[in-house]
Length: 168
Image 1 (cartoon, rainbow, N blue to C red):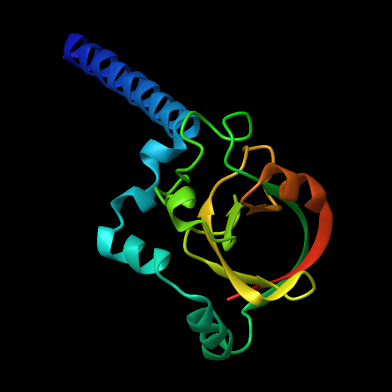
Image 2 (tube, rainbow, N blue to C red; image 1 turned 180 degrees about the vertical axis):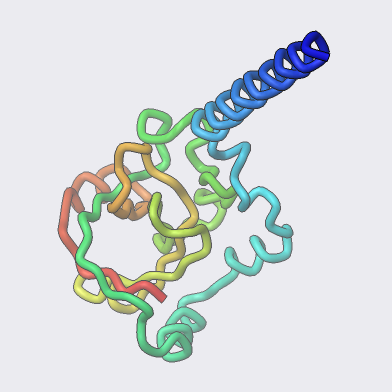
């Protein structure tokens, strides 16, 4: 009887250690490959297409439709453009699969603490534009936003600012 319980103990210990190894490996994959493991990869193509087709007139209507923001924060904001040295080997594709170069509108932000698809507005910087969270930043930047701009010159000119951000 003692021999059986000793074997069961060894087996259960082995299972626990294998489970821990599996979870560590899964966490590393999730951390190292956010684009692959992103929930947004499962979004239907129709939804992504709808997000790409929002026109300026519709954005102005969205400001009225959204009403009061859920939250207003003052946050550090920087800017980036689609270059390999600022992104990865596919600079036009965001973390959730959105194509910045095809869209070619400055209405996308990267943020690590807001979910994909969150609509925000910067009333002190560009009150007429509703930005959508479509991308992620380096993991060391959590409470920050990064506005995508068409050119690197525009992004450098924007620099680093502390802006009021309305979250809808």
